[in-house]
Length: 142
Image (cartoon, rainbow, N blue to C red; front, side):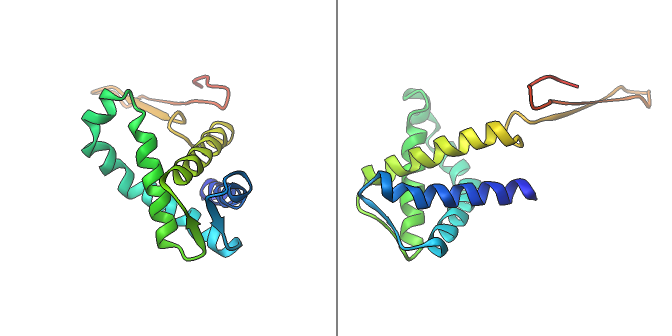
């Protein structure tokens, strides 16, 4: 649970920072940024996997670049849902989502809990022995 809160706070701070970098994005205040970060998190968890699956051929042809378009559309949708967030154009949404994605990637790499933080449990048939392995922060299996 603390990992989710940290991600939410960092995403909120990133959204608050974006209007200073991109003139086409306006954020009314902290409450709007908190709501937008929560909406982006829900959209990324629920809607994004379906969009990636539906556009898989296009994503493969573009070597994954189309995922950036999906991120921009979800960022723009979050701006449409949350009052207090104004996104002027698709390109503003594209650059904003690129910044949020970059910060999220850096954050997930440093605090763990991302896609590379795995636990492996191996059980043999007919034997009660179990091998539990977990990847450490340095990337080693222990």
